[in-house]
Length: 407
Image (cartoon, rainbow, N blue to C red; front, side, top):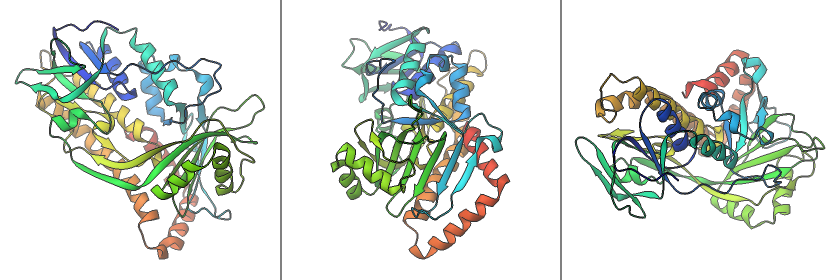
């Protein structure tokens, strides 16, 4: 860990998750002086580890391009990354309901997404950080430790530093419970979904054929995402099952083997017998929109500014779209211009307004259509899905939008 300096920094980033780490690297590459405040990283996973992190991300083509540009993708353990070449979406949990099929080949993409463990991605970002001239302070930023002045912002890291850190711009990349957002009075609309996400990993008897599958069942959305095949070409799978809280409690009370059997039954045994590869975790789901992404000398990125339902797997991609846009705005500012000026920061906020709103409306709209609409519309909904499956151009447009428009 590099010792903090009390000189005036260009940017201070609160948060050491994937979004904060990527932004620190991007801004350092743009020539700004950067410090990063966050908790120490998790212990590295040995290359031969058979443990699989139940938290995974579906990285879009644009996200992978960003990681390539930041020289992070080369540091990822690619043996633990799986491409998604196709996706099947079932508008019903019944076995005889046809799926809507999406294809990377039809859309002209290398892959629809790349599935990567949280730990694998953050470790690659941490390694890339070591090659940059970025101050790293282990700790957090509390609301009472931030003071905004006309020319700069002062922050005392927790546990309290002897002297405050001084920067032209403070960026909140500290997640859905952002202390920076709250301290700056930027808290906005927040809605708790009546669902929790149960996540776990399994090994199936059959290959997943590099295909993601998603079922909109009666009680929630069940997604099985491909992880790398094992030595016998059996398919490892990552589960994200968004269900009502009571159902989540039932699933979490099962043994790992019991949960595996329940999942296998829910997907009609498509992968044969499932074996657990990790313990399950349960995460509450919400929709959140900050009152504004920027304030004088402050900007929000990632979950600190917006949280969406995970059914589309676009949360991290949306946050890294913030990184790309904010880094570009600051790098292309006029010579001699202060990087914390509110008029400059509003360029970032305006550029992100449309993609963030579009993805929020899309995921929230799907949730409402399947889980809050009258049951009588279910046949019409399934008919619409069958019609969509015949519209190749529409499916291609949807795939390319998800791959790049959030940037």
